[in-house]
Structures are given as structure tokens and as C-alpha cells.
Amino acid sequence: MAFVLAGATLIDGNGGAPLKDAAIYVSGERINWVGGTADLPPAAQDAKQIDVSGKWLMPGIIDAHIHICYNGSDSVFTLLEKHRDDLVLEAVDICARTLAQGVTAIRDVGGEQYIEMSLRSAINRGFIRGPRMKLSGRVISMTGGHAHFIAREADGPDEMRKAAREQIKAGADLVKLMATGGSATPGQDIHASQLTVEEIAAVTEVAHMMGRHVAAHCHGTGGIRNCMLGGVDTIEHGTYLDEETADMMVANGAQLVLTLGAGNPDLESYPLSPVQQADAERRKPMIEQGVKQIRKTIALARAKGIFLGIGTDAGGNPLAPHQFAMARELELLVENDLTAMEAITIGTRNNAKVLRWDDEIGTVEAGKYADLLLLDADPLLDIRNLRQIAAVYKGGQKV
Ligand SMILES: [Zn+2]
Image 1 (cartoon, rainbow, N blue to C red):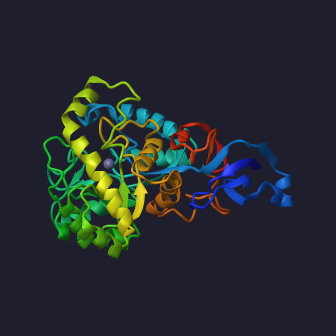
Image 2 (image 1 turned 180 degrees about the vertical axis):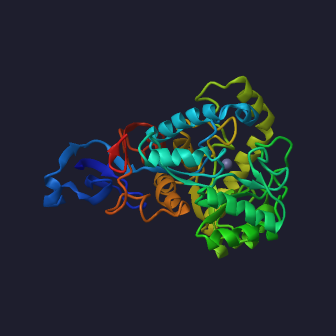
Image 3 (image 1 turned 90 degrees about the vertical axis):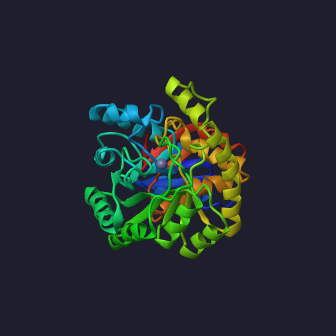
């Protein structure tokens, strides 16, 4: 099916000035032509014309760090006691909701029993609705490491290689390591390094040989340093980045995937369950400290010119629900002194690069998938208008 969306103000994801009275000609699942409505090519004039004047059109948002199999409201221990079928059914709903909120692609960096692989295949075959996916399979942690209760635990370079290859065998597009402690695992020190350089390098070697990239959970500075020495491609969270590790990231061309909402939960906009209240109380000092620290980290990363991506960590802890989580991430970027345009560019074009998928998604350009978000209000005027969704298109299909 071919159609034209005409008359909207276009934010194409590349960060340039918006184009007023824009038209997009979609044929099949891809964008065929983009430009001013007055310049519409003759072929497009035969297609179905849809007037979207007075609206804003942008690329579908991409979440570069999500956990689609977890609901982000139960404690992880409750989740682990659930029957697998219950997890699957809830995850099907999360996939549909994520897409309906304008997120047309995700990178899952920690799945559960490879349910996420089945979700991806069901979405690709059209059985259920959800975003496009890049998946890591199970996270790899040291014995007793961060999120060990869901991880493939491995120690020493040989076991790490085996663990990485298992994920790739199961269908992983990337490999996820836990390089430091994490706040979602009770009793852990987020500054403590949990993998040696040799263990990290063993994984990056085999992953790169098979065309996969490696993402590493890092809060502490030592973990970031180990990851840069070990050849990791994306640092997740990166909370305690310092001058030295920032320079190492630039030298390596490594990307920093910020996750702001998970360390700064939106406690006002949804009712908290007792589990969530307890978790909020337990993590309160960490959250307050984290919000201050991440402001410094963002400023440092920008001053050094580190490539930024962003993700929600939705599902990653009981205070990270799948509820306009990417809209909130981009709102928090603006709270950290980025412009709305910079935030949108990071959440679309940059994240497509984090997913190694920028040849097909992330911007509104001819040849790419027609993954589009149509808004009723101007997100450049107020970034919270990302929640004013008029329509979502994935691969040229209206959701
Ligand atoms: Zn996470």
C-alpha cells in the first residue's frame, strides 16, 4: 500500500531545522520520498493522500536499553517465581504498549529464558504487535555478580567465551556483560568492578568475530576502564565516568548509553505498590546521589564529544515501568540542559547507531523503514509533547 502524509512539520531525526508543510511518500514498508508538499513527485500523487497539517512528524523513537520481559513494577524475585507463561503473556502486552507509545525499535539488554527471542519472531511474523528488536539474550555476570539471578554466570576467559557463544547461538545480536555492581541487586557496591580485563577481552574477541557488538553495565569508574581496555562497544549507564575514562571512550569510539529514568524514577505519575514503595525507600540515597552524579557525567561526556545514546532500563527494576519511559528519558535529557532537538536526535538517529541499524531506521529518509511518530503538539516547544501521540507507524503500517 502507498500513501502520502502531507502538511505536517517534519523533524527528520538528523538534528537540522524542522521542515514546515512537509510530505512523506510511503510505499510498502519503506519511505519512498520526503520533501515539501509543493514538490511531491507525480508518482506520489496517485497514492492515498492523508492530510496531517497542524501535526508534527518525526522518526519512531528507539529505546537503546530495555528489558522487555520484565514489567518494571514487581520485584525481580516475584518475577522469578512466576510461571513462564505468565511472563510471556505480560511481555506480549508490554510489546504492544511500547509500540503504541511511539517506540518502534528497541535493544533488549537482558532477557529471560529467551522469551524475547520468541517475541521478536512473533512480531516479525505478524502474530503480535511490538517494536523491531535487537537482543542480547541472557546477561553474562561473574558468579554472584550483578543480576546473577537472571544471568549466565561465568568466570575466567574460557567460560566467558562459552557464555557469549551460547547467547549468539540462541539468536543474540549483541552480548551484554555486567562489569560492575548494580543497585537493583541488593547488597552490591556499584563501584566494585566485577570482571577482569581478560574476561571482558575474551568476550569482545569472540563477539566481534561473529559480527556482534558488546554492551557492558558499568557504574564505577574502574569498570568503565576495564571495559575500554577490553574493547567493549557500548557503556550502559556510565554513572561514574571521569576524565581518564572519557578520553579512553573517545579514543575507542565507544558509545555511552545513558539511562536516566531508572536512576530518577517518575514517582508522581503512577501509583506505587508496596513493593515499589519499599524499593524507593531502600534506594533513596542512591537515587539522590545518582541524579547529582549523572548531571556531571552528561556534562563531561558532552565536553569530550562522547557519542551518546539513551535507554529507559524499563523492566530493569521495580521502579522502571514501561509507561512513556522513553518520553521521560528525553524529558530528563532536557532537564540536563540539552535542547529538545538534541534529545530527539539522540533518541532516534543516535540510538539507531547504537543498535547498528542506522542504515534502515532512526531518521525520516528515503529508503528507510517508514517507522514514524505523528504528534498533536510541538515537541520542540515542550518535550513533554512526545506524549501527545496522534499516530504511530511501523514499516508503513498504522499501529
Ligand atoms: Zn538494564
